[in-house]
Figure 1 (tube, helix red, strand yellow):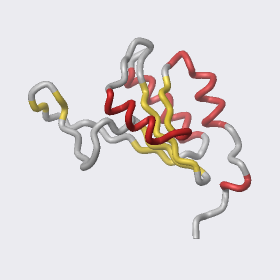
Figure 2 (figure 1 turned 45 degrees about the horizontal axis):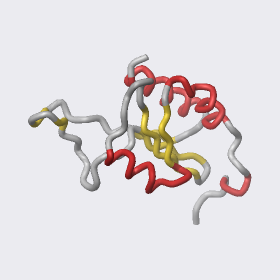
Figure 3 (figure 1 turned 45 degrees about the vertical axis):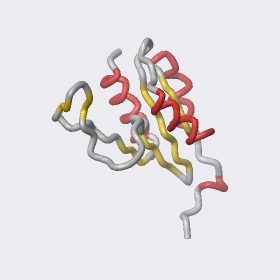
Length: 111
């Protein structure tokens, strides 16, 4: 499964289970060997930002053989327990997490 197809599957599942979802696409312009991405800040931002009921996940998606960059690893480490590195082989775990009922103490709207 390609990373794009995997991403679509995760995005669709997250939407089905009430998560807010964000993926920042790379610009079609290439500069040298890298894509230009329209955001300011530290490079390596994970592929998806998912939020629901007070929980925010940063998820980096990779194929079975895809490797994370040092910048991606730094973001996941900074996210701590809310950072995810997901691969297609983990689909059952991903589905379980995205479909789990939110804990009652996190369902309140921020004041």
